[in-house]
Image (cartoon, rainbow, N blue to C red; front, side):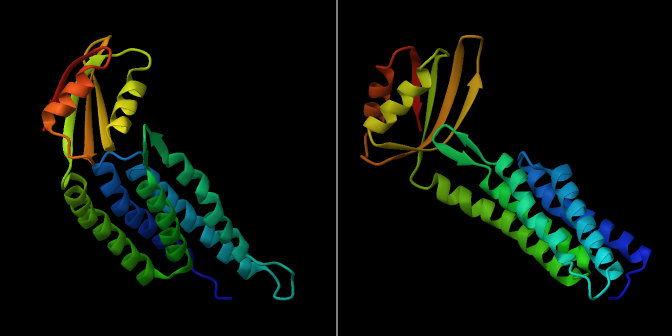
Length: 221
């Protein structure tokens, strides 16, 4: 096995940090849980593991019953712990899947750089960056097409969110996204992006939600 000089290993580590940073920048810019630092660390760490695997292989006798590639293989399974930590359930929505996938891909980029497959690492990083950027705009178009926004001001009390979810469910209103803003210690503003399956009028939606306990105001746009 060819022994890679130390300077090239250093270049590989720096390149992995740069490529991981490109993808991490996009995640950081969109305020995701795994941002610039996480992606750089994952990419550099996986690159280092691949270098260690490669160097270990060069020091093992060809007749020895050992497979140095198994060290790198553990990155693929081990990175799942980080990915699982990025996936969260927020109400009826699952968030963090894209971030988890990014962590997994970045680990692959680091492994590719670590083994010296530079072109594959660069091309993959460019593809991922372009996909994240371009598909974000497409996602927004799909997300807001034929959707409506319901803004609710209500008292922040136990069971309030459950009542709202039940109301949406009973009226065949599908929630596609939401955000919560605390107005004071006992008031909150909720913004729901929904799909109106039964084509209820805005007045009907406002009337049905307004009947709920502790709802102060409802706006539909």
